[in-house]
Amino acid sequence: MTWRAILTTSAVVAPITAVSLDIFGYVAKVEGISMQPTLNPTGESDYIFLNRWAVRNYEFARGDVVSLMCPNNPKQKIIKRIVALEGDTVKTISYKNRKVIIPKGHCWLEGDNRNHSLDSNYFGPVALGLITAKAKRIIWPPTRWKEIEFSNSIGSDRLKIPFANDDDDDDEDNF
Amino acid sequence: MEPAIYEKDVLLIENRSVIKEKLRKGDVVIVKSPKNPNVLLCKRITALSGDRISGLFSSKTIPRGHVWIEGDNSRNSSDSRNFGPIPYGLIQSRAFYKIWPLNDRGYID
Image (cartoon, rainbow over all chains, first blue to last red; front, side, top):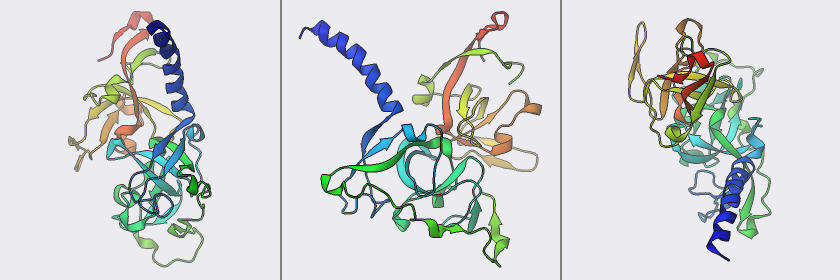
């Protein structure tokens, strides 16, 4: 192949690839233990497919595992589970308020590894606009292909059912 | 954003400043609304993280990784005075030049 052929091919392929990755998604390596045991249960990194197409309308369900820009540091990408959506009331683990009502356009995220996760318990409700992709599938290692659905019921104990009888409503607070 | 920018104006935007984190106080930026990520807002950055914003009775420091945005038309603008500081990650691009209407074209400052 001539240099010219290589250059012209790259000039066509590079933008198409970049746009495809941006619109459809890409594979990423999961670092850290904050999503154990769902991801990286043995400490060895899972590779997952980050689906960008699935977030194009910002439609989410409780239980979705998503990647997002960290609110304190936009250069850092983190992976957490959506525990609550706007309007829900959440019983927090280590946040400054015991209960939080999630504002419009926001959600509450937590890592599955409760005590080893930097999540909404630290930085509060997160604007949906920071979410970049949904993670639904583990791509590698092949032995983990079986676990392709993340359980949607993880985290349902964190929600306060709005019509349950409750005496301690006085410490509810907007964030 | 009146009188700097009116509805139906056409602007040139760039995202290099956003990616390189070279945005400054006074820049006009396009951001995803914290109330609805499907909506884009055009506002001006009036304070960066670490700066202090003083209201009537109290003053607030902008947290790390956040900015404070306000519309120029303060009487009719839903902005950080309404929804608080926004995370930097919501900023999409910076508007730097108005190309339409022609009699009002020029660099945005």
